[in-house]
Image 1 (cartoon, rainbow, N blue to C red):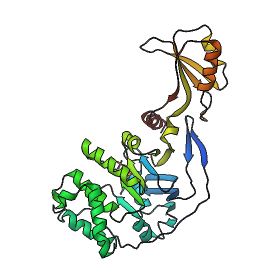
Image 2 (cartoon, rainbow, N blue to C red):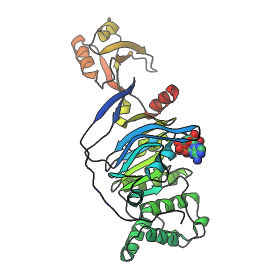
Image 3 (cartoon, protein in one colour):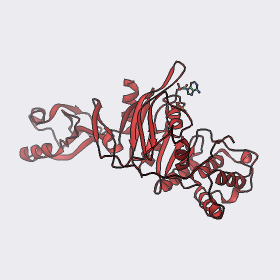
Image 4 (cartoon, rainbow, N blue to C red):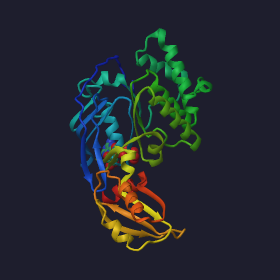
Length: 347
Ligand code: ATP
């Protein structure tokens, strides 16, 4: 059988010691390697080449139960290779992968039993009807006969396939085929969902619906999905792993990526000595004037360190002390797009 899923349901809890490694890999943001009390996925120093092409060059990351994480990267970054290794469909050249404490290489079947996997090109059978296909998956997943109907109903309802059950899969639109792929991935109610580009090729309405579905699924399962669409990450998750040229360039919560050490202060009019006073503040490495359409004097205050220090309180105290006419004071934030582009330029 093409899916090669001869499955046994197994469960093994894994307790790791709480450990939070904070490393700075790039000058402009904090790179956090997440390692929580429990780990759903542990990837350590994984490499994989296809002949001379180094698809993965020693990647490591950890995902805790209940997280929804986006694996973001441009075409050819190594996303599909990483997900295939995680699901046991491809062997790494080096490194280890455990899912729920089980080594993917030595416990392949048990791991696959715990995972719902939507591959980049889902292995659907075009001549089978939706319900026949899902019934076949239920058999392969070894869902007990008495429970099959309940499991099928839940997956069909979750993916909105009720009206398409008797249609051959080959006659469905791409969006509905994608839903069938998702239905087979969630059928056995796995604790971990791995989705390779789940919204690729869908129209905007289907994209919105699929994202809504993934969010709903994430309430029950850990979700790791790959994408090259920045807005998908922003819409779905609070943590992103950015992969470029087979290397992890960032692994952080979106809020941490967005934070900068800089602040912006807008005054009604420019007081004398404003540059000098701002520059003299602790933690400030420079001040630039920004030209804005409304003409109010606006200053970009550059923070010295990327350690997350917020300059706003000290700037506010200065403004109060000097009695400057303040219009606005805010922390500078960076969009995911800016971060991604900066990383791409540096790669
Ligand atoms: P995309 O977003 O385009 O799907 P990706 O991030 O998923 O890309 P991979 O498909 O993992 O990237 O590919 C990573 C690199 O490995 C690319 O350079 C790709 O050409 C190469 N590669 C992937 N599969 C094979 C293969 N079977 N044989 C040879 N090279 C491969």
